[in-house]
Amino acid sequence: MGSKNARGQAPAIRAAQAYSNKKAADKLLAEQKKEQASVQQLSRAQQKALTRQHAFNFNYDTLPKHSALKVIKDIDTGTVKLFVEFDIIYPKDIANDVNFLTVLPKYAELITKVEFRLVAPTNHGSPAIYRERVVNMMKTINCLNKFDIDEFQFVVSLNRAHNFAQMKLAAAAFGLNFKDWTMVTEVLHVKGRFNVDIGSKWDYRLACIYKEEFLVHKEL
Image 1 (cartoon, helix red, strand yellow):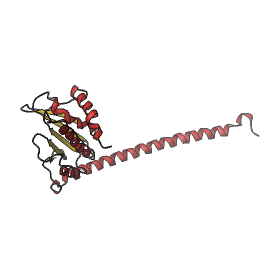
Image 2 (cartoon, rainbow, N blue to C red; image 1 turned 45 degrees about the vertical axis):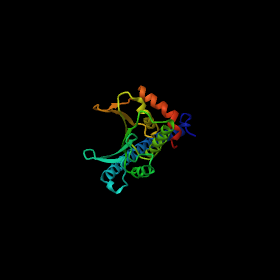
Image 3 (cartoon, rainbow, N blue to C red; image 1 turned 120 degrees about the vertical axis):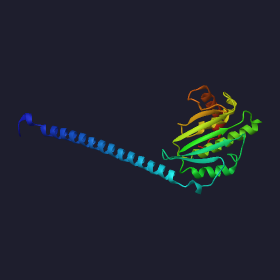
Image 4 (cartoon, rainbow, N blue to C red; image 1 turned 30 degrees about the horizontal axis):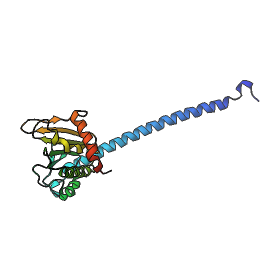
């Protein structure tokens, strides 16, 4: 029958061994998950590098052209940027032309960096014209939301400093799905660009205008 003190020891050993085995298995699983994550991260980085190289080597002359669109390649960084000129004061063919919204999506699979330059008047002539321009701005933003953007700068051209009336259409930027966009202003006859900082008075006013006038036109 064995000694009284020996009774029940085997199950205790088995329990301890099971705990040890489970701990070892959990550790192995954690290491495997970590290794798998590292492989996936490397794969994503490699894929991103290949995508960037493809975008840089691509012949953009094969894509449809528009006077409001310009592609610039940066040889030093191996990157490509799309410049969008939304000029309402001296319009050529801009976003209210259906052709523009037909051409712009052709760049979506290649472009990840965008600079959007807005040239808008202080006065729009009438509320109806202003509302139409709000709709056209949001049509363009909705189209740009189909791009896989990793850099977006919104540039607003002003005829004089602190002319917020010219800024109002820039509220459309708050409709971008890419949230790390930046905004600057250019003032006529003044060198340099001036940041519209997050949390600034203008940033707050534009966010309010977006909610009141632009949000209703955002595609979900």
